[in-house]
Image (tube, rainbow, N blue to C red; front, side, top):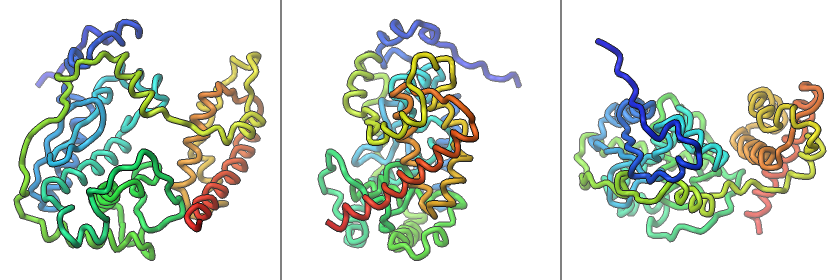
Length: 343
């Protein structure tokens, strides 16, 4: 059988200015035959392997979400075309779900919401005792405790701490992930009780048809009339990466902001290239808090990009100096997390 040809879109080669004039509904994108489609089938298979009868539906929209009362998941449109991935990274400095691992992690998280909606889990007293009230208003912002063991660690920014629904979705995602070995990983953590509750709950729900089966799609891509330019203006206002400037003084000492070094590698690309080596060095000095280390490192890389810093000098020395800097700030971050929550 001949290989299926990739569909070409007339807007794919337009200059950025003209591309941004295209309306979302006119992009003509679908999930079929994209790199995301096999991942959708993979997580569907993970549900089936647990004998959960929910059959979630997926559609393209403007962001990740699972609407209340709908056992399905919306996926952001920019993930399904390489040109749009590049635009997203250029405008927002990051792509939420832009790699296979990240995409699977978010899909499992959103499936947690879909399962909650399908079985109306938030109405039960045992669910509320473990996670809280789903009716709790979402905060405009939240200040997590990086050292807390009351919550699982799955998505970035200690997202489980933001709301009871997110706490459940994160716990479900850890439970669903194959080979996550959560009983051992969370041994001694209060969060283990939540995982054990989810394990028991899903065992009870195995083979049980869901109460909610609607196939409704909220804000599907063909109904979104805004242009890419309008979309990104609103998104930058709402979801500005907000990289903190608290590291600026140290970063400016280590890397160069001088125009004469503009031909040198950017500090952001240098750090991304050596990320794994740096993490291994620092993890030895900071103990088990690799998740916290990743959050601080992401902030520092983002700030290097915003400041347009360049990596000048010996790679070996820069790696060592940055490892020391990252160790200091990771330790401070953990200390502040404990300090905030003793006030």
